[in-house]
Structures are given as structure tokens and as C-alpha cells.
Image 1 (cartoon, rainbow, N blue to C red):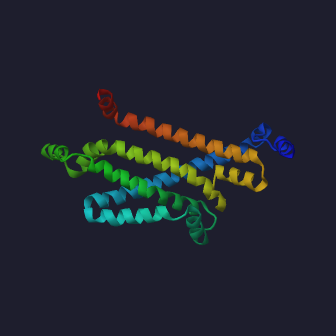
Image 2 (cartoon, rainbow, N blue to C red; image 1 turned 180 degrees about the vertical axis):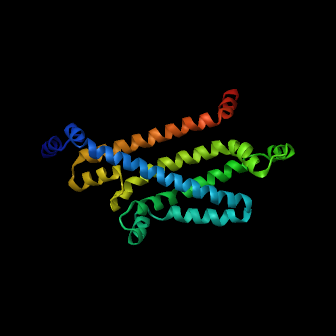
Image 3 (cartoon, helix red, strand yellow; image 1 turned 45 degrees about the vertical axis):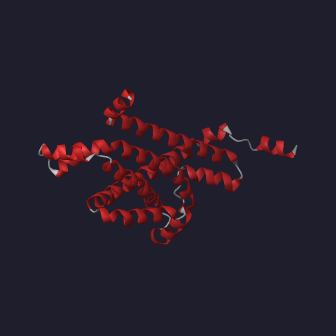
Length: 226
């Protein structure tokens, strides 16, 4: 009886909170999206550079994979804590670890994508007189795109989840609502933060999926033919 009374006093969602605190919820959602995009963009740029090195110098692939795997194994709370003494409770302290966690996923998929391009295709491009840069941009990159898009989808969705943990240093976007709800045993902000983070992950995943299909129409035709 006491539990039922407590649930009645503290329901999962108070819609008046959603209305009254909409500005705060909106700010948290925008911050969550910004942190995700900053981290993934930085991770993609760094991963492209590391992948280029690994593809150019094959011996470098093992140490690069080892380094990115090492970063991925560090607990997120510990990595945030390591950076706070240097950068304070700033956005940089949140973005750098988030970007680091994308490297293993993105490097693995970028390298796999370029390795999937057959030697016959490369030789045909060389025979057509293409320069190395043009061959990479116009032949190899489009063919590697399905792998890259898959890696990007995984990196974005996982980053959306990890951003919530950054709330411990005051930069968590929707994680701030979740943490606030946990601290006060007030389920409404916790529920809103959790649901919106899930919806954000699904929305971004869907957008990347659609963009990937638009960028690789031949891949869809091949699947249909099969």
C-alpha cells in the first residue's frame, strides 16, 4: 500500500514538468546533439588520418588498432576524470573522450572498406590514367562507403549513449536530466532524459542510413538484384 501511494506521489512522468521545464529540456537536447556531433566529427577526421597511414604503411595497422583498442577499454568515467584537472569542467573534457571512443569503430570500418576494393578495380583505374588522389576519391571511396556508413552509424549511436555519462562533469546534455532525477529520486526528468536520448539515437541512425543509401545507390540495386 505504501509503495502504491509513493508511486502515485511520484509518477514516471509528470506532464506539467514537461511543459514547465520545456526550455531546460530543449537546451539539454541541443547540448546532447552538439556533443555527439563534435565528438563524431573529430573522431572521423582523426580516424581518416589514421586509416590513411594504416593503408599506406601496412605495418602501422597493428599498432594503430592496438592504440585505439586501448582507448576504447578505458572506462568513460575514468577518462573524463583524467582530463578534468587539465581542462576543467568544460566541453573539451567531454568531447575528447567521446571522440576517442569512436576511433576503434571508425578506423576498423574505414580500413575494411578500402580493403574490400578489388585489385582489378584499382588496376582498371590506373589503366585509365587516374592519379592516386583521383582514384581514391572517385573509385575507392565510393566503393568503401557502405563500410564507412556502417561504422559511422555504430559510432553515432554509441556516442549518444556515452554523452549521458558526461553529466558527471556537467556536460551531459540529456544525461543531466537523468542525473538530476536520480539525485532527487524524481522519476520524471530521468524518464524524459532517457526516452529522448533513445529517440535521438534512433533519429540520427535513421538519417545516416538514408544518407548512406543516397550515397551508394548501386549498393541498393545490387541487393535488389540478389
